[in-house]
Amino acid sequence: MKKIIIINGPNLNLLGKREPSIYGAESFDDFFTDLKQKYKGFDLTYFQSNIEGELIDKLQDVGFSYDGIILNAAAYTHTSVGIGDAIKAIESPVIEVHISNTFAREEFRHQSYISPNAKGVILGFGLQSYELALQSFM
Ligand code: DQA
Image 1 (cartoon, helix red, strand yellow):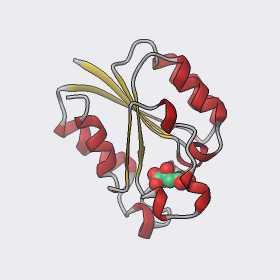
Image 2 (image 1 turned 180 degrees about the vertical axis):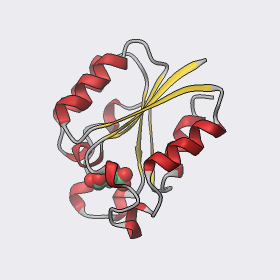
Image 3 (image 1 turned 90 degrees about the vertical axis):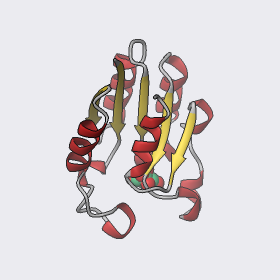
Image 4 (image 1 turned 135 degrees about the vertical axis):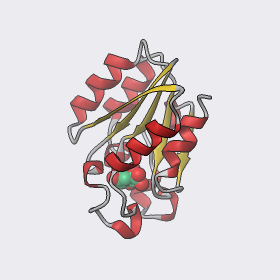
């Protein structure tokens, strides 16, 4: 069974409460419960942190043994050389996801330190972005 982890960055613990017009009204926990139920063929886990170094630690922990990483680095996408370097350093393929279409938003969200090192990028489909990323590992 393929081992896949979803890693969420800062403020994504507030999904459902946070700017629902952009990020939707569903909590990530509810979404993740449904996703696990629907894709029982994957060994699927989930990690969230608001702390950049903890995200890097997790990428290093899983990045030499997992079959895939689905990463929404949230605001760190646009700022973190460290997370970009971690993705370069590990072996597991990383799919970058975003809930919103970051290219339809402010200019500073158009820059990503994740994309150059990701296997692929999926954005703008709401929480479905994560499901599409998961399907890419089927
Ligand atoms: C986000 C987009 C980022 O620009 C933002 O900082 C987030 C969420 C998204 O999923 O749409 O926190 O990654």
